[in-house]
Length: 65
Image (tube, rainbow, N blue to C red; front, side, top):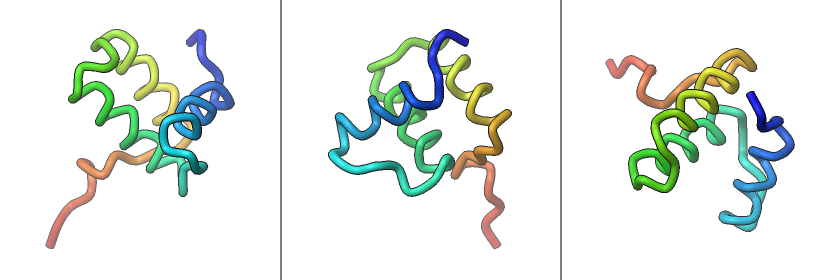
C-alpha cells in the first residue's frame, strides 16, 4: 500500500479538525468517503485491508442483538 497510517490519519484530521477516536473510526471515515464517491473502489480496498490488518473492525461487522 502506498499510504501510511500517518497519511491516513493526516487526511482524517484535515477534514474533521480532530484526530480519529480509534482505528475503527478511521476505517468508518474511509468507508464513508467510498460511499460518497470521494475515493474509488481500488483505493478503498487498499485502505480497508491495510487498516483491517492493523486491527480495525468496521461498524458494519458488529452484530446487533
